[in-house]
Image 1 (cartoon, rainbow, N blue to C red):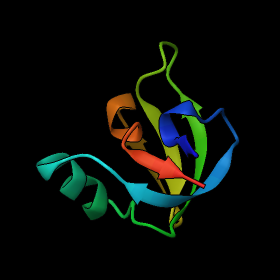
Image 2: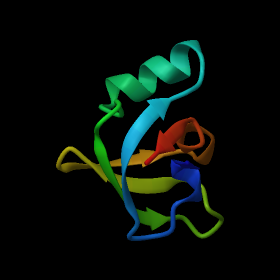
Image 3: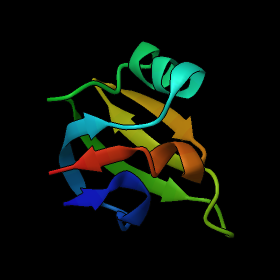
Image 4: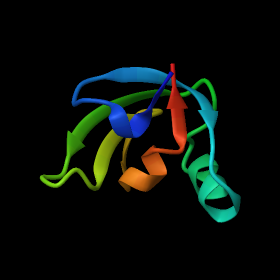
Length: 73
């Protein structure tokens, strides 16, 4: 099992589980990061934060601590 924050550019996977608590978890769900969703890592900023992903046909930017809550398969 790998978390989204460990992905390399171009790597894809399916969301298995979303961890975290309260507002952060709810925010991830509101952005469409739900179990079964396909995610591809597109870009990473020079210092590794933030990360740009493609999800459900749109591009989204996440902080590394948010991406660490997303377990991928």
